[in-house]
Image: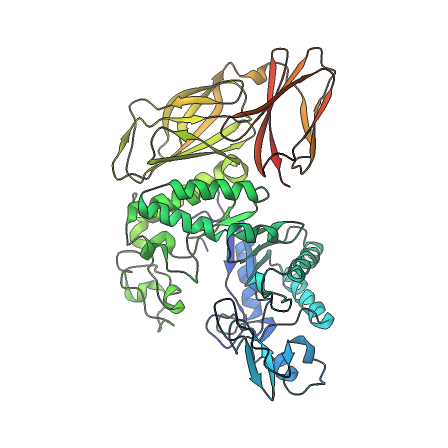
Length: 566
C-alpha cells in the first residue's frame, strides 16, 4: 500500500496514485471473477470480508479511494439464481434471465452464438454459456441489483467500474447501446448517488468515441474508458507521427462533457503497452507523459510502470506483479497462479526504484506533477500550433494558469521548437515559464488581450526524440497582467449551451461593448457591438465544441470559454 501511496503528500518515493480499481473480487469459480456466484461475498481466494474491510480502511487512511468491478450484465451459470431459473418454467427466478422455448438464432457482435440450450429451453448469454445475461426487465432482478449497489457503498467502497456496460439490456435484435440500457444506467446513477453522494462510476463501453459519449450524458455514468484515444496514443507514438492523436484528442474534447472520460494505455483485456511498443523505453515514457497530462481521469494498469510484458491469452496479460529481482519476483513464497514474465529480473520495483532515469521513476514524477497542478487535473484542453509536423502540443488551462505539453514524435532532437497559443481565457500580461519535469526556468512569455502568444520558443533548449516538455505558464513574478486593472465582470449562460447564449456584464457598461467569437484555432467567427448590460446570440450554426468569447468594454477585456453541445 505504501508503494502506491504512503499517505504523506511531502514524499516522492511512492507512486502517488489516489484511487484503486479492483477487478472482480466477489465470489466466483473462475480466476478472472467475471462470473459471479454471490454478489454479497468476497472471493475466498482473496480473503474474507473482514480482510476486505481492513484493506478498505488502509486505503482510506492513505487518501486512496477504492472502486470495485460490478458485473451487472451477467452472472455465473453456477449462481443459485440461474440454477433455480433453469430448473423449470414457473419458478420465481425464471424471468431473472432471458429464456426462449426455441433458438432465435441471433448472432452476437463478433459472430458468436448467443443462445445456449439447457433443460429443453434456450437462454441468452452474449459472452459464453457459463455467463448467462441477467434480465433487467425483471423488477425483482433490478431491485436486487440496486440492493447490491447499496450494500458495497454502505460497506465503504467509493464507486464502481461497470463491466460490459453497453450490453445490459437488449431490444430485439439490437444487442448493444439500447435506450433500455441508458434508462438502467440513469436509474443506477440515482441509486448510487443516493447511497453515497461522492460515489464514482466508470463504464467499459468498448466502442468508437461517438458511441461511448451517450453513456456519460444525462446523469448516467461519471466517466467511460476512452478506447479510441488509447489506441491513437499507441499508434502515433509507434509510428512517430502525432497526426492521428491530435485529431482524436480534439474529437474527444469536442464530444464529451468536460473531463468525463478515462484515459489509459492498455488494460487487462489488451496486449500490454511494453509489448505494443516493442520494448522501446523512450516510447514507453512518451506515451506515459501524454496520457498522464491529458484531460480526463487517468488509469494505470498495474505493472505498466515497471514495464511488465503480457500478450496473447488473457491470463498472460494478468501475470504476477514484479516486485524484486529475487525468487519469484518477490510476489510469493509459494507457487504463483501464473508463470512470471521472463523480464522480471531487470524490470521490477526494487531495481527500477534505484535508477533515477527508470520508467518507474518517470511514472512517479509524472503522477506527482499531475497531483500538484490544478490545471492538469481540472483544466480545459486547448490546441497549440507548431511549425514542425513532428511536434505535438496542447495545453490545459485552469483559472489563470496553464500547463503546456510539447512532445517530439520525431527520431531526432529538435532545437528550439516553437509553439503558438491562438486563444485562451488567460489574462494579458507577461508570465513566468517553468518546465516542471526538470525544474528548468524557461524565461517568460507575453500574452495578448486574446490570451494568446505566437511562436514562443525557449532559448538554447533542445527537445529530444520522444521527449515531452511539461511547461507551467504561471502568474508568479509576472508583470503587466490585465487583471490588475478593474475586472470586467462577464457571465455566459447557459454554458454549456445547445441554443442561445446570453452575455451579461455585471455593471451598466459606460462604453460600447464589443463581443468577438473565436474557435479553438483562434479564427474569429463573428464580431458584434452593443450598448447595455446583456447580449444574446444563437449557437445553432456552430458545431459542438469549445469556443472563446472575447468581451471588450473601454480598455478592459475578458475572455470566457463557451461550450456548445447540441
